Amino acid sequence: AQSVTQPDIHITVSEGASLELRCNYSYGATPYLFWYVQSPGQGLQLLLKYFSGDTLVQGIKGFEAEFKRSQSSFNLRKPSVHWSDAAEYFCAVGAPNQAGTALIFGKGTTLSVSS
Amino acid sequence: GAVVSQHPSRVICKSGTSVKIECRSLDFQATTMFWYRQFPKKSLMLMATSNEGSKATYEQGVEKDKFLINHASLTLSTLTVTSAHPEDSSFYICSAKEPGGGGYTFGSGTRLTVV
Image (cartoon, rainbow over all chains, first blue to last red):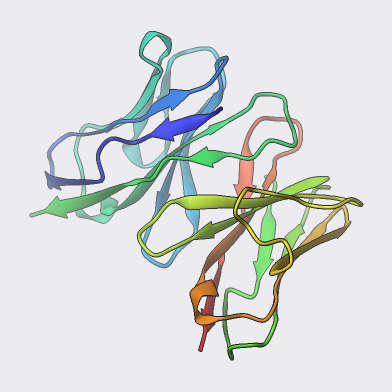
């Protein structure tokens, strides 16, 4: 069965410092992988996605993620965090080429940014 | 890009009444839509997969008689919370798979409060 693990429930980073949010997945083949961000009381915003090809994926807001097949990981990174990045971050996995398969989400990581 | 419109964004209802949430694909046809529930500070839990013209597929533990899903057309899926109780208060989000690719598009969510 598909599953997504985000080991860090809450992370605090100083403004201007680098960030890495971890995500591990369990899937029979290479899935589609996604990172979403959610601000309090808001919907989901897609940061980036990986389907195939280059394993380093660039997203919006200066975020990037690297797919590592050997580690079943898809960690999200940002070189310099801004206070506005404080939010909830979700990693998700989807099945390629299967229209009827929903995204499965990790439990999320809450990012706090200190000044 | 593919857009999913969800309505209403917020609703307050009295205990014992029913509430309908609509999810529309605006510029594409969605044979399959997905309904998620999100508790405060928690991840998105898949409730059910809505299939146009057929019965929805519910995840284990989700009461199909309480959460009625109808997908009568290729652009509209509805979730009706029947005989709502305070414990049904939550954030509900719909989603559909984007046509021609592997991405998913999400509605902006509905904040349901049962008083």
